[in-house]
Length: 530
Image (cartoon, rainbow, N blue to C red):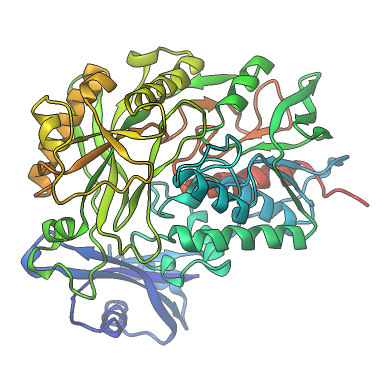
């Protein structure tokens, strides 16, 4: 328990210790046991006077809650340390809880269940992270696509080959717990206080391995190259799971399969689980020089040692309820081949921890929904798949990605006119016409976004900004329905969770959802005996 003092603004040159002094003054200088930085962000709205904005975590030798109530200041908030509240049920387990997928949701569900003595069994369709890195790098260097071990599938989930961004829009108190667990498993300590924390792909690989090692040390098991193929249901309750390695008894199954397991979703629909189409987004990756993004955000202070590489998050409403926005911005990163199905091109963004690459990239995407594919979940997945397949053909059917420079795209002319921004996509790009790739409404919204974002961030729509397509895995196109108890209707014991089930959007929210699935299982069952 502690008090958080926020909105402490300091010039770039001020030492961070000054934030502690000002926080104490706001609190009336009570006796302090410990202070630390809770959050640090950048206020660059006035580029001639950029400031660092701090929130300070203060543990006091007094009644902290009473002090916060007495001060009644918008700068002061009382915080209780949030931990997963596990209540053990009394129903007996005859088999280990099964977790399908070892991305953020599956990792955190497995860790919590292992710590509580439930000895979970994790089924991961892809390989362990070391073998996965080898398979992905072979693909990026021109080798064949492995449909089971790739950017989407394998230990750590899709986030392992990304920037490892930890920003989230949810305000669940368990978010802080997730950050602390990531840091304790090898993520940089600064994720606990940066307003826009990230781990970096290079660090994430070590973090996910550390999670697996703890799960197994506590009695759990992770089986790689083991794909969930079906659920065995009797009387509306799960009794086993069918995998490519055989059938496994199961009373409690966590579905944490990630947003790209389309074959799994198709089988769940055939099995009778209730699945709905949901809104998601499609578009392309846009690349700029990182130094130009820094200059657009920070002006003359670009390059200051206390300023992080520039990041942006932009959005604009359009006609018909559509929105165009940037997503998953990767400072100093690269655009990566991210396909998981033969015959499709998929792009994603990735940064290492240092974020020191020449280019910045982000998804420039447009919301799609019922007006594009109706209410059928198979049609929603098919909409994204059709764009990926069209991009594959436009690139020459060889994982070369279709690309177009922003100047030509805005002018309605296909092709590439490369300038300072050179493509980073490892499999190469081919000049294309995005008006032939995307439906007209999508292409026009992307143009609307380029023009609107240029007004907010100078240089965003520069003629040599490079668009590479397609970005189609922004989130799951479907939601696997669940009740208040976390279980799928008509399939008791099945707990859909995370991004693939349509209940999360990113590492943090998926991890929190995985924790809550584990807590729901623990609340019903007691640990396996013997």
